[in-house]
Length: 394
Image (tube, rainbow, N blue to C red; front, side):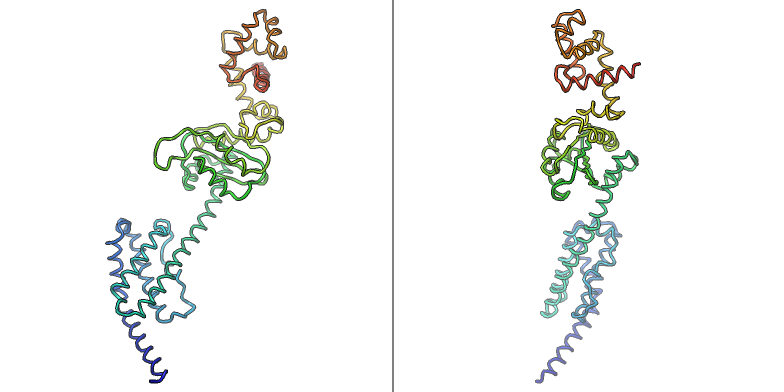
């Protein structure tokens, strides 16, 4: 038998197989959808519109296989075209894992019911289904990349809004779109320079330390919004320290100051923490010995001298006002103690009291305001509060 005759017979067999495939394409699609409902509970639970969209994808895949079988060498066939009829919402609601389950069911149906008696057709379908699986992974990878780019832009917008105190009404929906889930207080942190590596290093470190994080990379600084993560197992929320979290990420920052804004109860109030952190970042050169990281509220004197109105109000409310409301003259004692160079004996002589009385009053001051006048740094804070309070009272 000549080679031409053999080739002619091969073409004839292929044509008959192709004709049979075309005649049963509807039956293949129906059998596939029926198997999907039987084998995949999540598919049966989908809304009708989503099931219909998946049905279109399955039919498109079967028709595409027939076209491919007709001319497997054609350059016009693109596996990703199978998913062209699927709406974007379908990709968002059906995961890659579920899509591969769909492909597996389609392969099983076609192999068991329509290609079992034709080895050539079965092998062709396996080759085709492999390409489809890769095409599905490619579609989801591109969707994830596009979503990642969108998330980056949205995250930058959220951080910028927090820094500028803008669009507070839109913040909850925007951070929800980013998957933000935090409990307890929120802190804004500002660090100088660039990070070592990419932002994913920071994100992984924050997750390991039990933190939710939003990040904004600006020209000369890094802005972080930190909150405590919700426990994955839904268990008890454990104590959480923003200082511990930031210290755990210090090695990822370039040298320079790292300032932690004060706690606020939620994302809507984050701009308050951001204002304090920005003011602290601007004023931190005034304290060469500042720790790293440093709390913005530990920089209240420098911030007040730099013109930060929030620092001035904070100092008056937290130090001057509580002391001025005491029946004992704690305010006068503090002023005399600081004016005499923090001398117990000098203060006692100034006030005509015993030095032990001065010691007692200084302890009371520390208990009331949280700053100890006998400590040099705390004395500076209290001295600034006295000056601002007196100016405000005058």
